[in-house]
Image 1 (cartoon, rainbow, N blue to C red):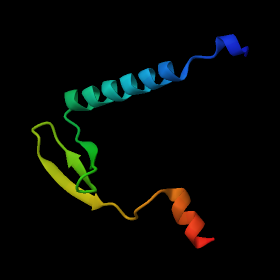
Image 2: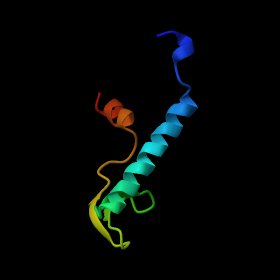
Image 3: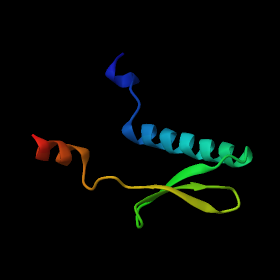
Length: 73
């Protein structure tokens, strides 16, 4: 592929956001719970269409993956 045929980073991000939005709408239409991460509480939830949230887990480690690996080495 030539360099002129590549798509820009902004286009990739826009397409990824649109794909996520479509998938969330699809799950709502099928009444399938979605998985949501809450940054404030650092918990993972199953969220259903009626707005109820069921906690399914907590964050296991803090920091970035690369930072954790550097500490072990």
